[in-house]
Length: 78
Image (cartoon, one colour):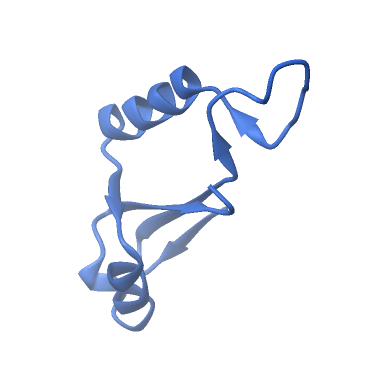
């Protein structure tokens, strides 16, 4: 998800599991570590700053407190 708050960009990236699925299984819930690392590298090289949940919540009330490009990473059952 990507949105804009008062001229600041906010991206929310959702992940489920980092690594390889169990032997003999395939699953779209997994993302290989190398792909995850390349996504983090892309964010860094493109000027995105990863924020935590507290910064995200403060940013909803006061968007000017967010970096110009903020990314929140979420993990479900990770």
